[in-house]
Image (tube, rainbow, N blue to C red; front, top):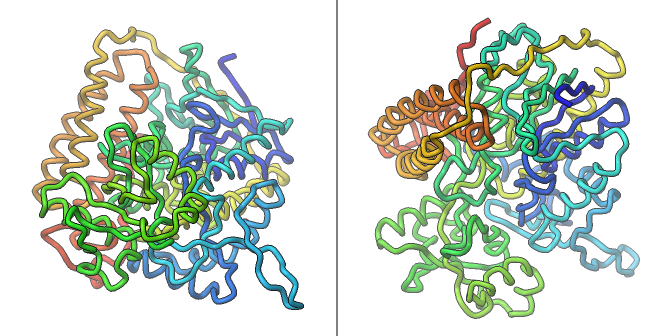
Length: 548
């Protein structure tokens, strides 16, 4: 089967894509595409939890204030208010679906005991408001939603399918090159079936990008291997508006160990009292911020980067050994077991940690319904730039955003489906690989993949400069030319699709970083070390010039 027609095509199976699928499947057919197994997502690795107001001393205003402070002047206040206020309803919905969050007994009004959520605290939050399932919140949410999606009769799951490019009404086929104008509309995607080495045409009235982030653009990341910015790159090539790609969040505490690929030490460890120390035992965060170890991620990541550059050491250390061992094992069972398997007993020994690329605050620009500026194309989750995060994401706001926007987008799409305001689906041109051959030079792919990730880490990382960004721009231009030449001559394979996407995302990050001549949130440039609200309190907008 090379052609699939469906009402709704969803690319990605994290919390955003899955919730959107479940909410729309009662009203139309859904094709859910994911490039590996359904459980392979950033959501599945999310440890901390979901920031939501439930505590007796907490309030929406406090959560809003913390989010705005973290976003460093670039958050959309209306979006922040909408997302924060929708939080409790989202958590209650997950609970009804079967997600098991940690609870504790709290005194009731009549002296009885009623169960309430066990609320954790993370950097940048003034209150305990992190709803969690131990230190495996994402895995628990993903488990429930994947099971529900697999059982739903209107959802067809296509695992091991790699999206290549979007299809629009005016797509003209030149070996997979999608061309469009802003008066155009999206009507599906070309997708590579890994098992059969075959490109399928998915035609759909609605296409949803829920492909997650792009951490693999960097050499060191907390993200899984699938996080190659596919949705952002496809949307950019199709002509959608992209914003704020310079704001790449580096999580301060990724486990530093040669056998610990991508393993994150949750911010909740600091929320429960963990402190950052250098090799000599000095608690250094007080030298950088009044909030010390509970400062926002951008501040902590830069502080660690500075400490490592000063000392020449490979890592700093996160110390929670002063807390009772039973409490540590009970609150962080997954982190405890992982560290112990590597010979680190976190109840007795500080954990070696380094910053790593973690989260994209920019992405495909959407409105409050998740709509992009290409008709019938939506984006949710980390793929999207909604205005919530501004210049720096507040810890545990990511899953919250995904849940809220999956809901608002679903309501908009259901209304469209019920009104039947669609043109007949056009017959997209078939995938054309005439004149291509199987690759005999895979070294081109592997070499460019490695070079992109290294140049991004060295030149476009936590601390940037004009000279570093110029070097990065020159190199990415050369690499892009090599990739395009390779792409047109050989049959597509998953590695080539992902290489093409990380190169596109890298190009967008570099362009946005060069444009912003100030330091704000996650973007720090040595030549412009101060925030400049007069000139730069605005989003960085980019759009690819496309052929109409």
